[in-house]
Length: 461
Ligand SMILES: Cc1cc2nc3c(=O)[nH]c(=O)nc-3n(C[C@H](O)[C@H](O)[C@H](O)COP(=O)(O)OP(=O)(O)OC[C@H]3O[C@@H](n4cnc5c(N)ncnc54)[C@H](O)[C@@H]3O)c2cc1C
Ligand SMILES: NC(=O)c1ccc[n+]([C@@H]2O[C@H](COP(=O)([O-])OP(=O)(O)OC[C@H]3O[C@@H](n4cnc5c(N)ncnc54)[C@H](O)[C@@H]3O)[C@@H](O)[C@H]2O)c1
Image (cartoon, rainbow, N blue to C red; front, side):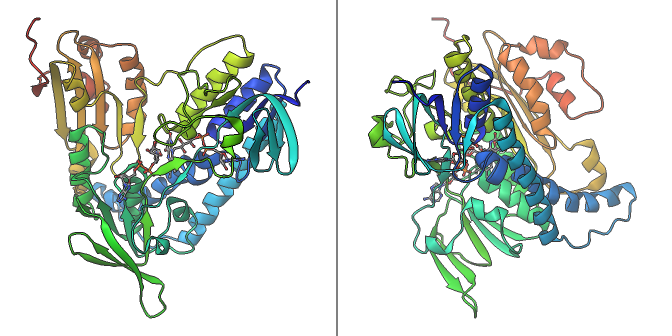
């Protein structure tokens, strides 16, 4: 029996949109369902509005910085309502572009929830559709830590729509989103408390970066509470609208808003996955191989729902590779090695390749670290602006296995270094490259003196 579609994609986010568009371009008959917002997390409650908020926060500090250069710019007040309205207009515009792009490519769009009826049939907003291939691209949803009173706390999504900027904000978590929103709200003028279980934020990142970020955040105006968890959240204030948070070290914080930025889980809500026969892995994500194939021959999964590397460019790469494989006659897999990533904290940090801790397990590594005050801040005198640049170099091959940076423009700088590391550049290649002067980035090609050796000594065996 012929199927209604060659491909049906569940989820119109970063991965699903790219997959649908490219597959339709290859001539496939494509259907795609999106239940909430076209463009998914990244466009609506992730990368894009987050970056606009980061940029909003930067202006306040720049106004103050400019005094070091002789300007007399008064910081003034920030109009939260006007900013959120401007942000929402831009997000609405992007949503429209995403939906239109799919239509233009020839994919049939459904503004509806999709759920499995059997391995080839879906209920899409009440309509039954069949497809030869089905791709689960449903992303992830915020996970609220199980803390007494958690129902009084918000989730990351809420921070994009708050009617008023909280004067006092408690952020629980030490991951990407927690440190990013700490910088945003502190920059906009809120009193921010960052509460996290580890001694430093950003577990899994290079230790030097983690320590330098914590130092910078504390030197700014963020109140850090490392190594603790909230034990209780209760309503406070005459109208019950305030929030009182008790921490495991006994500290008590009074706030206007508390957000549990405690991670995300694969989104399988209402998918009726059991009817598809698709298996999950031990972590509760859809289990896939490197080609995004599930255990069911014609069903695939891409992006956050597979919980591999939960980043937009990764979901896009997986979607594009799958479209080329299924319909383009170009079978290939997206490579998840040496994926550069940035955290838009204040200051931001970015990284590609191995951390010193990971690399040291492979053998002796030459470690180069440079810490300095960027030229701009020699005049602004702003606290917590020291940059940190670091290279992790395999002692045997002299290949640069990792590059890490904390400091302004780190994300912009790391994109280019990502190419070098991916190509297997050696320290000599870096040294032979002439710097661009005066920049912070030139430090990556002028680090002549090794800071230390990490990892087991080479026994020659
Ligand atoms: C606060 C925040 C900031 C982030 N910042 C960055 C960043 O700066 N850079 C970066 O690279 N990554 C960032 N990310 C991560 C990035 O947003 C995700 O990795 C990316 O969106 C994953 O894409 P996806 O296609 O897997 O899922 P999504 O983009 O989440 O798309 C999934 C879509 O499926 C829809 N859906 C789910 N179930 C169904 C169903 N049954 N039927 C129909 N539709 C359904 C959902 O409504 C959603 O729109 C951020 C994430 C967050 C939360
Ligand atoms: N700039 C970017 O590229 C960017 C920005 C935001 C998010 N993301 C992606 O989205 C993913 C999710 O981000 P996220 O920040 O929501 O989650 P995360 O997984 O990065 O961090 C979750 C944090 O919550 C803490 N936590 C978990 N359970 C807890 C508990 N019970 N009590 C206290 N703390 C607890 C964890 O220790 C961790 O610090 C990231 O891993 C990343 O892949 C990327």
